[in-house]
Image 1 (cartoon, rainbow, N blue to C red):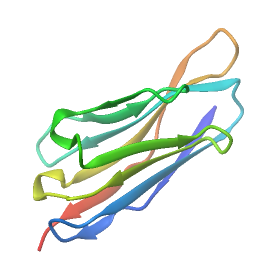
Image 2 (cartoon, rainbow, N blue to C red; image 1 turned 120 degrees about the horizontal axis):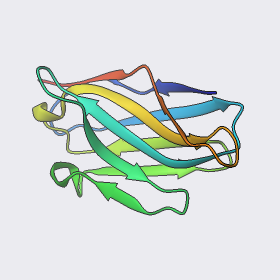
Image 3 (cartoon, helix red, strand yellow; image 1 turned 60 degrees about the vertical axis):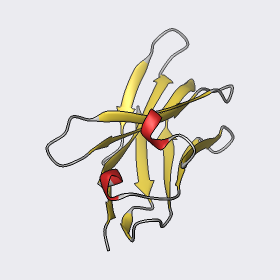
Image 4 (tube, one colour; image 1 turned 30 degrees about the vertical axis):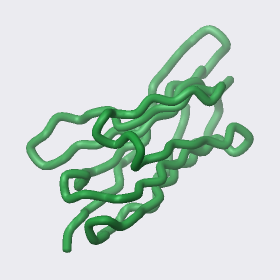
Length: 120
């Protein structure tokens, strides 16, 4: 079982920056893809960015060039550096981890979510 703890959300003015962090703990064989999702008011949850164990990344078009996802495999952490934030980035951000509880099983874990509000 993996337990995810997120931190770093808050209120920021348009054009500002925030860094989200997520730490995975518990008993597992390994971690595959780590990702950040978000859910804005009245919207469905959407993937913002992900990163494979090998470092390959994906970004939603609207955040390309502004957000950077990174991970530390030795610490089982994933970060999301967000710059040039816009009001439309306002949402609850969720950490998502695909992990292996055993060598042959794959499970998905979600964090509790952290609020990001972009407003003047």
